[in-house]
Amino acid sequence: MKAKELAKKLLFDIYKNLDEFSKDIIRCDLADIEFKGFYLKGKNGEKVYIRTLEDFENLEDFEVEERKYKLKNINLKHFEDGLMIINLSSKKSKNYKFEADYTITYPSYDVTAEFRERMIKWKEMDEEEMDKAIAEFDNKVNDILSDILDEVKIGKRVSAHLDVFVDSHKLENFVDEGEDIIIIWIHPAFLYSDDKILKGLLAYELSKFNKKFLEKYYKDILLYCKEIKNLTNKTPKIIEKIRNIALKYNDTLTLNLINEMEK
Image (cartoon, helix red, strand yellow):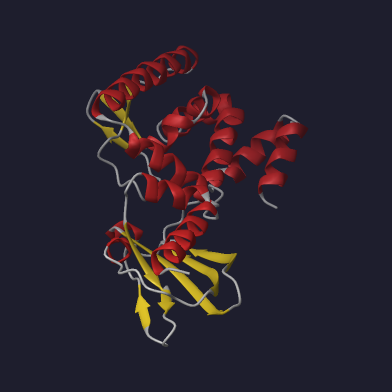
């Protein structure tokens, strides 16, 4: 087999067997790709290593032995620095073979694959799409906010906005408080959350200023907590306060949901 044919076949098999998040990284050109253990062995025993896609593009064509390659690991530990490392191993074989039995090493952020996929979608938007999404989101959350404030009063003006300057690798909302205004800045990951979750998010942030929001909207706040766990694998501490409220009202459904979240 020729070197370019084998290398092309291997690259195709690697991509075909990647998880969707890793495919998105390649499709959107979000990181440089580095290979480890990707080499071709010529008929005379010479080895040619392919460490980057540029190496593949500049590969000279020559006769190579066929090998069995195994995809072992996708290393995204340095993804925030723009690097994705694909680790392979191989051994001589009568025919070309490929096996995908790999692990994924993620950056040391407390976020899930779902969170990362949402951030990929966010970063894929062009300027026009992003402006439209921000405007629609801000209108929606402020409509939800208005409904909440009709039920529970607070002594300041309140507004909510998508936070476009937030650290996209960390799930965190911010609240600015002035003399007569509270501004809730919402992480872009929640752009893809439904209205009930957004209602819970807003009520949760407002409960820091007035406990009545927690008492009134504890079910919505629990849905927000469930979303937090979906995105970070962490359960917010406010769960215990929600449990106490559910016990007070003998709310079995809420208690069961809390128990499921804590498994």
